[in-house]
Image 1 (tube, rainbow, N blue to C red):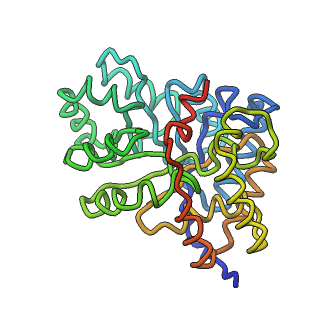
Image 2: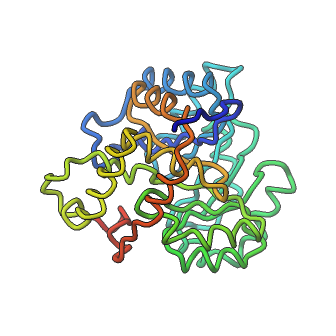
Length: 295
């Protein structure tokens, strides 16, 4: 039986990599124009989405967001941004540039874009703490991929936000225990890759090598979708939203219609037994779940 989700505050962060780069395994249209982005952002805000996720590495996404803010003075998003992989450690210049480009008074979060960058700059995290004291940055965090990185970050009291992949394949069977441990340590958990860059929407017969390698698991997802009569896109998003140890779920869209579809899809709490069936899926080669390794 389906039940509806309370819509008072969406547990969603809107990702913006698509605004600055051609991104995604199923993105055939490329970057949207500024006017299209403005329409997407205004619709997101009106629907209750309050936060954007971006990065210096996302092309001109900072400037695109800033342009929206300048034209919509009463519609300011909270923004999380990420430092570049190769960092000169001039944090003050970076933060000031981000605030100016994004046209925001402070960042909700400033994240290292990789665990490797975090390790290289670990001795400088105290400097980032000064931005928290000054009110220019609310939280410090790291974007990661692996469980081993998650385990290490749980121990670092200077890290507030941990952003990591989580979805129907990179799921509770792989990450559940560590997510619980992270929450017990007081971490803010943001997850991304709810749709695995669109992989869940590929035809099962697609010649894509990742689809071929994950075929048994993808077939099982399709079987569950048919049995419960819930579309895969809706299962994928709500599987993440229903996790009590996940604070917010990051999704990206290529166009306004995708956003509207996602907003319609969140009005659902999935049956417990459906979630349990997804939890049972276990991909043994977790490298297949990392889009950075797909090339």
